[in-house]
Image 1 (spheres, protein in one colour):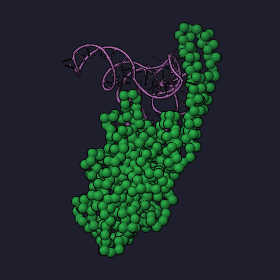
Image 2 (image 1 turned 90 degrees about the vertical axis):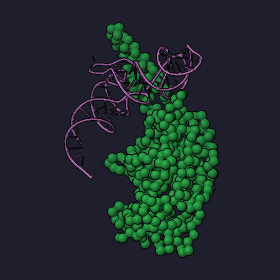
Image 3 (image 1 turned 180 degrees about the vertical axis):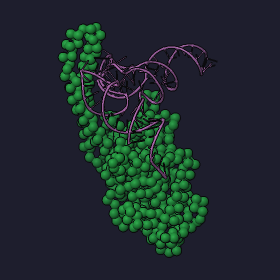
Image 4 (image 1 turned 90 degrees about the horizontal axis):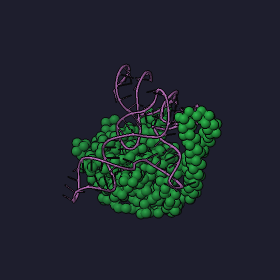
Length: 426
RNA sequence: GCCGAGAUCGCAUAGCCCGGUAUUGCGGUGGAUUCGAAAUCCACUGUCCCCUGGACGCGGGAGUUCGAAUCUCCCUCUCGGCGCCA
């Protein structure tokens, strides 16, 4: 959510940003209109309250001096003031609520370097890392590999939970565990603190961190407790300091989160989504930073570099993509994706998303830091380290051998105790 | 799940019984003192506004009242006791 002062003092900045995204200005103007009406209502209400307070004080005075006649006189005079205050209060609240419902849906202001484009076709390459693996045979897709090695059970999972769920078995399941350990170790060495978050959140906290549309398409709701399964540990870790004023000396707060992630994936179908590429549940190691506003752009680059270094260490060919204006979403001000090369699919596909959300989430969550003249919103940043199911796909496809077995990346060998994955026995 | 106690400004705390608009300490900022520092002393230190002034603010919501931190009801969370439990 954008700060209200940005609307009041710098609405043209938001309008210019909407132009880049190809959005109309209607909601911006509507927010400003509602804000003005709310302020007017507030002043009206404020005046009524002032009158009431004056009267209340006069009653107290009269009571003290024992002048019961005076007390009765004032009381009959101001009898209806309370109802007036209540109705004005109601009016002001309704306007404020309308204003903020609309404001919540207005997207973050983009970094000036974000490429302008209509959709994902407008994304540009940032950098390319490693080399395309060469095979002296036709590389298989991960779907074929998981079947050959009996590493994944999709149909039995569908039986007990539904489609897009899976049992992960044998050495592939162990590789997933190895990857989690490796990624957490890697980031702890770089000054991040390991945090395991709750995997459900309440609505209030959740509204602070996500696009409101996600409640219909992404998050699972848990009835009757009115909780939501987290779609990523970004959400609980970012909301962790909700409603707090953070000591500036603690910034930047760097966390590495590990959690299962739950996504409804409403509307996702198609051949490219088969296997374990797009699933309802996966495990993810995530980098989270809560920072001082002055540091966030530098830290955003640091998050990206951590990913590049990690994916290089894993020996996986990948490219970094600048996400363009039309593909950005509501919350981020700038986003890099990392796409790993999938030889079976003959394409780069998304494995990492690295965002600076500036003060957008912090405004909604009322997360501030102390300054000499008042409190100011912090910045929040997040980046995948590894989404394990997708990293497994990249490893399987890039490290496959001609007989369908898969070579373990060197950095994971100590965690696995072997250098080639074996098929599962059943 | 049951019983009891509690939630007050960045932190800590008083006020609640008995309704009249939040006390004190710490921390922070500025100043005095000092060659400088420590110590000490003074002032300021929740938010907002149409800013000589005013409105709001005591976990959230509703109610009673001319007036609620204070009384009543509902909810959330915390602490203690009991129960259940990996």
